Image (tube, rainbow, N blue to C red):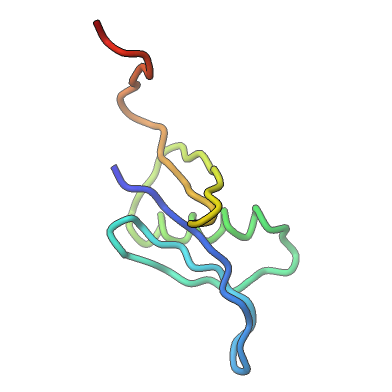
Length: 86
């Protein structure tokens, strides 16, 4: 299973702010910042754009990692207990 990681790209002299969404294998999209949306929704939009590009579907959960940024994980599929199996 792969994750999606999004992070903000600051504006330059030529481009406005953007969000980069990438998979753990390195496939990515860059979408422009939408000022009508808040921070979380901008990151959600970038993750959705990447899912559309790759043909991915399912239910995704967003979390935060201080070093990586927003992290999206697909929760569909096989469920696993976090407790040790004995």
